Length: 105
Image (cartoon, rainbow, N blue to C red; front, top):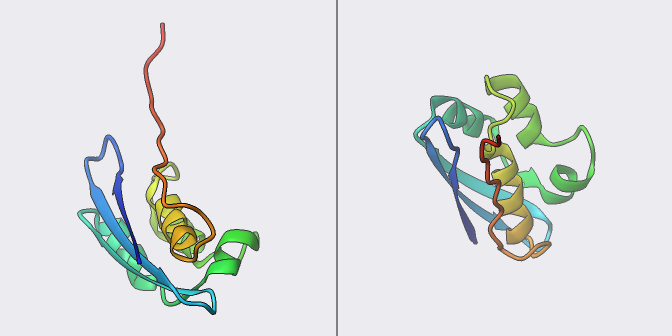
């Protein structure tokens, strides 16, 4: 099982994702968030096929649910969900992903 904590930035919401993939590359996710949109999105997700989620363009349940429900396309949570299932399937190391923004001159 892999646990991801996602701090979405300016909105202030934190999301926790617990992902667990089996040897058949099917993954279950448990998502808790202070964001009502993420919680609604999580309700749409069933068992996820890791290979379809990560490698088949246009077949990701996570991205389809995000496109349908989330009002803001730059929300980092969908990618955090995908990174969690990727690591839970042993297809990536559970390493932090960081985007650092700074206003330039």
